[in-house]
Image (cartoon, rainbow, N blue to C red; front, top):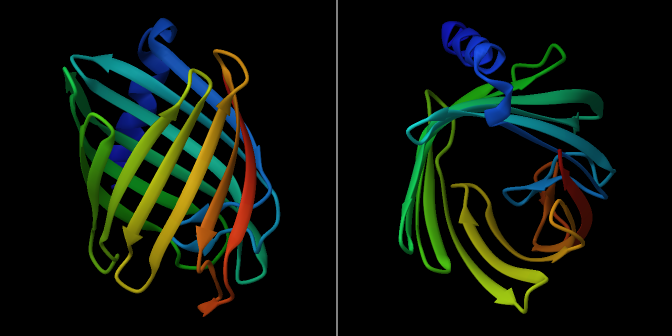
Length: 202
């Protein structure tokens, strides 16, 4: 695994910067797969992705998290292949979730998703003891400035349902809101939660 991360990082640093894209954002709560990752506190994230040609890509994404009361940093290293033909799209790859701190929270996944028109279905297959995750997304364009996404996911131990509304402020900036049903905090369901988020492309 360490060799794979070194390879992804090396490729990103040596490939032409003209093919690299990036983004940064801030949210009032980092909610992921039916669970808050920041104990309902704000999160700041940053990502870089390198296009490698012929549909291949590699990237890294990072955010602050709160794990069992400890403030840590999450860094996700990933690489994969994507293609689109007409209304059909395919994306598959491998991702490694890394966390700072002394806890044993790191895990890895293989992932695949297929989309047709407004519908996307996907599955993340946990490596080793990591859990599998399956999801379905339905994106409904609302005029020329907003998208509404209905999401359903099954993380074996957690079912998550959410609705996201994303407004395009410009070609590079998006403001949105996510309402997630039955968000869990330390394994205890407490009801719905709302997260506001802002994202900008570099």
